Figure (tube, one colour):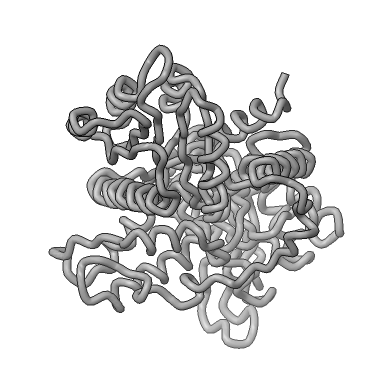
Length: 461
């Protein structure tokens, strides 16, 4: 998998005749592919090593390394990468040799546009299906997890690194991220990788209780402290003694309760509601919020001193749309969790994979989990198809663009594509304050492709 934030296949076209590069890019870019062109086979080989490609189209006759040699070297780097050979000097013997060396197809010039498009589409579908189902199979037996956290994308690897560092300390950790991203799983991973792992992990959702109930749940109460308090009750702080207390949605806590919490964090002592006895505890605090608490501090809603007590280390959990490389592993986990029969070897059709990658996932991992559970219920065989997904996941809204406003009528196709692409890159760089990785994410391309495009249009010195 790569860093693309949208599911867009990347095709490398190699030909020392630059006219063909322009023709093929103009033909294929409107189909929604990310196109990289190269007129030197040795440079193309470097791109194959460094770039996450989905398909290579190469001419046979080229100066230096020819297409057959490039095919052989490409297969050494990625045996599954489809390579289409093109030539104006085709013979049956040459075609047979190319297929023996595992070329996906062998096409003669001049080619028919629609036939080439169909060949490319089939090659990409086969490669994508093999890759995704291989990842699905591998993930079932070799999960990329930290505790129960699943994923190996760059954002998650960074989080694993932070978990490993903070787990051994007593520092308070604030976990920030949208609902459904697994903040409590990260809190548990910190606890169970810490010296406190054999002591209690106690959690409480501060946004789910009224102020009175939350105070009682946190600090406990004495018998008769209020109507209905028929017996003494220990609070979460007492229950978490020598362990970890996880305060979920801490930003929902009232101002008066924030004052009491601050005192406990400073002194590690408190009294139960209705009581006078001071209780001392040793508790590590982890907290979480789906809101940016810095903004609440600026607005006077959340105490600044409490924020700094809780926010010694901050871990930001990305939404699922920013870590789509983890989708195959999450899918594998949910398939294993929900499939009615463990004997079923579940696969996903190419259309389903595309839908999962293209969707924005406002409900994050929780929504993906519900989607996979539903698909397994609806599916009657071993392959999940679009019919097994919710309608909103597979139906796309029609997008209308006033072409005359975007592209002058006088421009040829290749010039128009170049101009539009250049403007999109400049806009993304401006929006990201010239941070290339962020600009690439906004455009739905990898950083390597972004770098290639900038070099192509003279944006790099």
